Length: 245
Length: 147
Length: 53
Image (cartoon, rainbow over all chains, first blue to last red; front, top):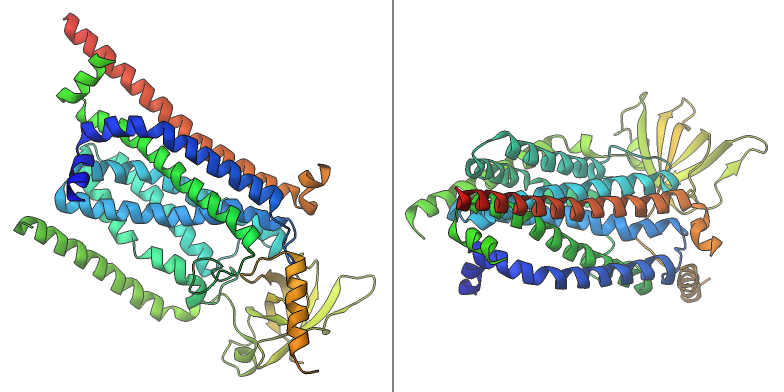
């Protein structure tokens, strides 16, 4: 386990392996999302209360899950970067931020589009919506802070601290619908016991969630590779790789 | 782990514990402000502030909805299964507004104890299923319940 | 088919959501891909300049 971890933490190994991995990840991701879309838009039945409008769930819920998951990846990378000063952890932290912000924005926008026809309001300031909006500002703050500091290693340490401070918001987002009264309903899938969703509606949701997870992997690898090259531009493995091709 | 790394780990632990405690205390102090709506029981018992605009959330009692002909005036009763409040509203109701479903109404209580709403929002639950499944579930529930 | 696109009257809300998802996901692939390609060609140019000098 540790040897695999150490090997992947080495920039040349990471770069070479990710080149090989990317086409495979892209193919599986495309298949999962196509299957999820067919399942969600065509095969899944309409909802007994919300009719066809509930189909926004197949974008909204996976994006919202990813907005939390990517933040946890960033906080863990931040901790690793601060303790062990591993370059790759810094790179993952930096590369994840714009993708996390994108998924948070997508979750908020699709929520707005779902809220208007069902609740009767585009936006309300309840605990769930407000804490998710705060998450978007956290992501944007992390991106802005990184770009404001010229020394990129110091910039990475600074955003690692910010990411770790912001991690307190993650349980608040998740439990907001249970701790306080909110307009947003409680959890359907991520709770103890059986999910309160019909199986034919749940399967496309899980396919989309897996597809989004792989999408994040692809996007973060693309960004991390550029970031890594920028930091290692003077090193021998980069020169050798450029000469090889 | 060397002492320097141990020190950094301790720093991270304290950082998270510190912000966690601060956030926890702040949220505990502002607990009431974090609530989006009051329950009907809190309004009836006087726990909710009177003579000001508040939000109240509850279920629409089946059979309580009265619509005036040729106008958008509507009145209905909301309940939290302890207390009931009659609500008056003039306007368009959201698509999900239904008897037996949750709503959040914003407005104030008048002297007669009727809640005059300026806004009605529908609150949906966390259940998703096709109509056939919902029908068979309610049939089963009716079948087992002694009439 | 028309029924499918109508989404039971919620066409605007459903299809706007899917369109937004499409735009945001595409942006997250195309932009990093282009930045990476540009960076490689810049590095390569710098390398040839150095070997010629």
